Image 1 (cartoon, rainbow, N blue to C red):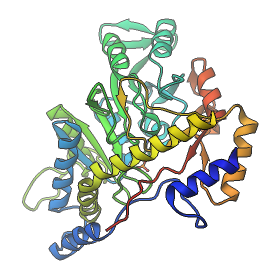
Image 2: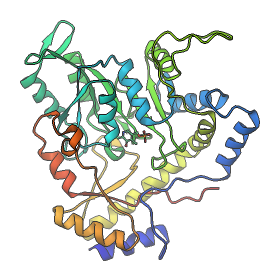
Image 3: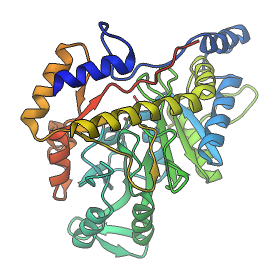
Image 4: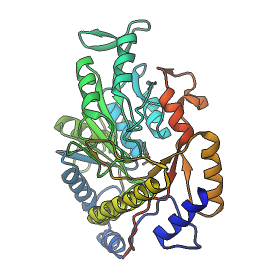
Amino acid sequence: MSEAFIRFVRELYGEPRAGIPLHAPVMGTREKARVGEAIDSSFVSSVGAFVTEFERQVAAFVGSRYAVATVNGTAGLHAALVVAGVQAGDMVLTQSLTFIATCNAIHYCGADPVFIDVDEDTLGLSPEALASWLEEHAEQREDGAYEPASGRRIRACVPMHTLGHPVRIEKIAEICAAWGIELVEDAAEALGSTRGGRHCGTFGRLGVFSFNGNKIITTGGGGMIVTDDEDLARRAKHLTTTAKKPHPWAFEHDEIGFNYRLPNLNAAFGVAQMERLPELMASKREVAAAYARWCKAQGMAFVHEPAGTRSNYWLNALRLADEAERDAFLAATNAAGVMTRPLWTPMHRLPMYAQARRGPLPVTERLAATVVNIPSSARMAGG
Ligand SMILES: *Cc1c(COP(=O)(O)O)cnc(C)c1O
């Protein structure tokens, strides 16, 4: 089975011998031209026109009113949580099946994650598991949700759109609204993904994207907070740019902010990448469709976009029968230079988060043991 897969992937990418990466960025003369313009403008760092242009492009693309660029997605998540009101001692509901950044951002606020199970088909936060944890552990008070046992506020919920596949976000939004819980979407992997025609990251009060080198588009490193709320946008911009009060020359800061600014050089790169995004998305859907056809013929389980959604298919995935079969597949493919990877070790199994509160996590455990990511780059030349 691994042998047939290796042959298929080499054919798909037309690379019989060279190593095939999990996800390579597509870049070239357009990015060089934009970065060159930034250099010529002399604004390469924390001030410059490309930052504003990149923010405008992303806001327009996802259909949000405001966008605030950040130095990476993790910083964007941290700032979004602060702006959403997450404070030291709060509890934040999220999934254990995620990249470490989601949890770390919660911890940076002095809050603690609570792990809720995921759905089998979306690989993301399960609204049913969320509702049942809340019914069992939470109490609704005038100003929001609390855990009566500890008196702690359950402040926010951070679902993640795993591998670009949209979670049941409307259902999650309904539950959060009913309980008075702030919804912040970790849409780091989901630029280009929609549910019911609406873009991931725009269902919550705030959403966050990442432009790390392995994401669907990259700025080298970068992130973006999106929101429809003008006050939240203004506050996110202020906090991520050292909380400096506007003044022609004076350096005055009105709170402890962060230097989370995206440099103009990186934003210039991002502007060129945004111009490529529609083509990248089309190419990635073709790759996903090719895998889906092949898997069907081979009787293998391909991870499809959930019903009612359009996924960006950031990373394609297969489900194997069990952990042993998964490990054999990982060993054979990587030995042949076809890069494949397991999902993340679930957060509740890492030493830093082993003590965190959690609901039952049977689906998380099952997916973590059986899903593998397979080569997913767009098939396009840089140019
Ligand atoms: C990539 C990613 C982030 C942000 O990562 P950065 O490398 O800091 O941009 C956050 N959450 C998830 C789920 C991610 O995949």
